[in-house]
Length: 253
Image 1 (cartoon, rainbow, N blue to C red):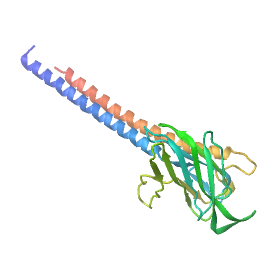
Image 2: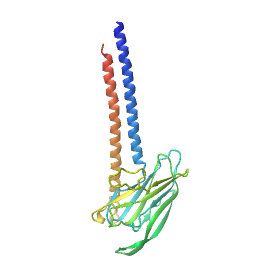
Image 3: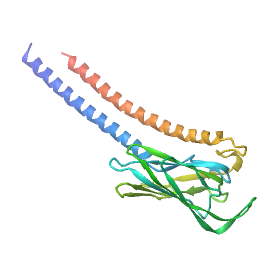
Image 4: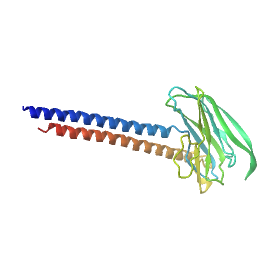
């Protein structure tokens, strides 16, 4: 074997190792970035379903609270309901280990309904006594009698208190055309249409509609997860392709 060939072969292997290291680094960085983005997107406090029809009746709102701290647990959750466009007939579903305190406020503008004029509405719900650990979440269910008809969305500002005293204020509202803020408030969109046809329980007591709406929200989250996983697999594929090319070149005399 000639000295020239040996040197050429050595340089080829050196370039191969360098290329593989770079490909591996790129893949790791890409995968980590994508997974971090997925984690950030899912760490927000959210309300489900994401939308209801204006004036919808007899439905359920679920506030999902994830714990995004590694060294502290969530022990207190405060959800503030709007009073300028009040949610009527609010009832809190019991949650094991948690105690709910409901605060009502007198409305500046009473709301007329088929059952009479409403002068007070729930303005705050505070859950305490429970614990949401690292990597976990809790769903808090709130039933309502009727949603407002005179607005296109409802904002539920939320405070999340951790065991180390840290308070995360989920109160920011996105401006038109801007990106999502760092700590967005849970937002419920109200769409035009018959309130009885909203994704809420029907008047005969059936709860199939709320489950369908919640399933829709879960499907969206699943789709986002699959998309991110696909990108990670794609990055791994690029690394594998680079490895194959380098091996092919290094095998040439």
